[in-house]
Image (cartoon, rainbow, N blue to C red; front, top):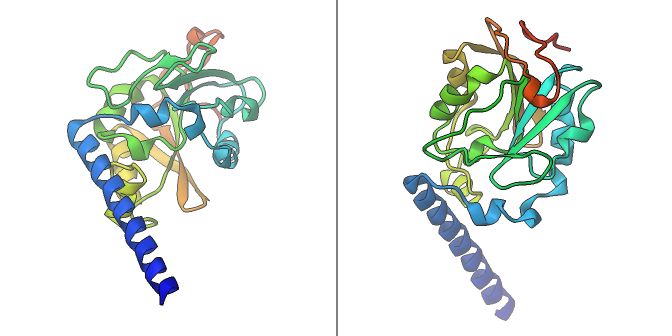
Length: 224
């Protein structure tokens, strides 16, 4: 009897915790904000994500300039193919020339052009993906991004309890990039997430000396 009652209490507490976390995320989403306290804390950056980062790195062509949004521990840098030049961007300064940027901010900085942009474990926390990519996509010919879509993780309450503020299907997510002149040439799975590679249909000269090399690309880098 006591064990059953104890299990029931624990279950109710867990459910209440999930609902509270979901409510906090919904409020933050309504206000257009970012969870600064969580993502400013290095303890929130899990080594469990490193295998996803390594998988993403295999989708990046050698010799390209790469800007990683939500760089965190900057693990991507060690997995990049030969000849790549890396620039980190994050909510807080992680050192090594980090471009500090809140992707939910009303005003975004101008990002130096790079061949490739990477968003690993980031898109779920962006309040307005259409607005973000309308603003930044012109600086890149290739965008590699992970995302846990609504088909894989359908419960809105559970999504909000994870801190996720959007709920796209695979088709809806790809539609955002399609409208901006990209096509998806690769989709891979990582746990319950998918990793997408979007390539600009009509490439522009976007590689930049800002990443530490000469301007190099007038076309999309050769894909592997």
